[in-house]
Length: 194
Image (tube, rainbow, N blue to C red; front, side, top):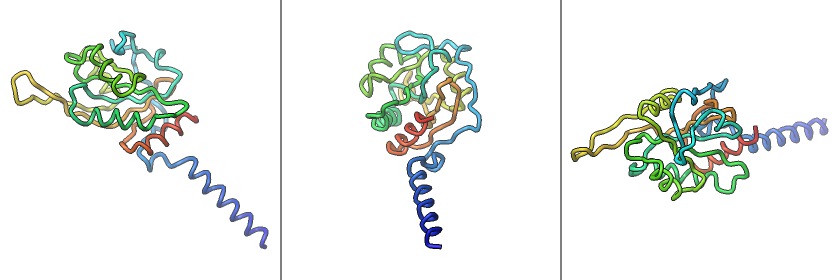
């Protein structure tokens, strides 16, 4: 009977160790679809800040994190990009981080490139015509609205802070709803291991 007790303790210990190795991703902020949803990247004229077309084929082969924002954002965008940078630091297989500009009028490719390089030179800025950005946001379930500023011609955007997760086939795999760098790191490590 003592042998059975030892087996149960060892089994529970192994199960506990596996739970530590594979956190419940939902509990730390990752909402995953049961089946990833294809995204029609090829239907829109979206380019990166280097002028390269963003297609499903160009995004294939690597996990990607998509964030909607703009370079004139005073708080949410710079904080999110900084948190992401901390989360991916030293990861052997970090996800590709992409900021989709909600403000293609002011966020030129050069401005996007300079802005993102201040956080991480590997970050990618995405831009395009306003209607293509709206279509991409709609396809990924992300909401935003342009807010008039206090002076004539000034404006800002109110936008979601959720992160969109694209799997290595460029399909929409889910959302991340945390800004905790350690939780993000655990999510990214788990995804990279798939």
